[in-house]
Image (cartoon, rainbow, N blue to C red):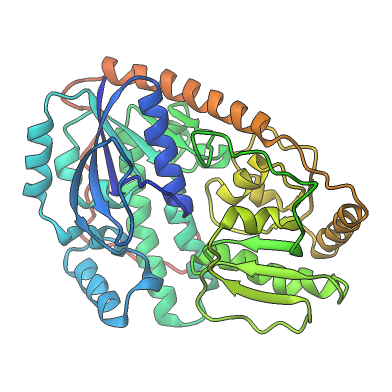
Length: 415
């Protein structure tokens, strides 16, 4: 089959963020099944496109709020309001619909589109609508935006998050309803677009790289910290988990326990515990994780799979996880303990660190987990792709995504 992968950001050679890792897994899975994949999307500055791929770049575009100045953010907001769209799709309007249409015309004939996340497909819905598609839902983005609105501290911020959530909800519903099949990364997200869609939605297991990570020499590696957390903390759902860990779990930890927190964040929290240190970006994320005795997996909100959890399991690391950190993971390794209460979470961390420091590293063969995830990923892809060839070539699965004349911003919950 010849498939067009449509993504706001194209898959890259060295994926680091959760979005990039998921992008690359989708691309690698499609190619491993023997399909020709043409890619349309933007390249994030500082990245290199995935090698040996048929790329049709729309240009370079920085989409991360934490990496741009206030003027750019105001520009995105103005574009969103003028075009009556979400801010995330407004960022995509750096190119024209005619440019997208021209690329698709040049790639014809093809069997269908793989619409990767909501941003670019919603921005140019009228262009992509005529073709059969599979929708890849990294998260239920509207749910995350509604959560952000509920936790917002000011009236303006609350209004903007609610506005974003309303648009995202409409776009996601339409993309899911029009698709031959939907790939989500967690079981809960299968039902995020309604029961009518859930029978065409399937959980796509993920791996952080197509090849399994090399085994860790646990007997000769020196531990750098008792607990190691790494993530993009500037992303609000991640930050909610980190704030919960620092504010509610850390006070239960003994003062001698060392806690290192790596990754980008907006504003360093004030923490009284003497063992907590913020190390910023680290040159080797894998070395940082494996240099920890135990990994806390602290997600508390958002949707979709937590790729840091998958990476931890692929490395065979002992961990303590919240239930939210285990979304989309069918088989949890036996060296992962689970707790949602802060006191119990801390108790399990202390217990596991003590065992590691006593000589029981508790590490497992992560390649077993990796092989199982990859096998399930390819099975799900193969089964859903069959539906593309059986679909109406004119794409008549539903109505074209559109925005109502006015979106009422309500005071809570889903509309």
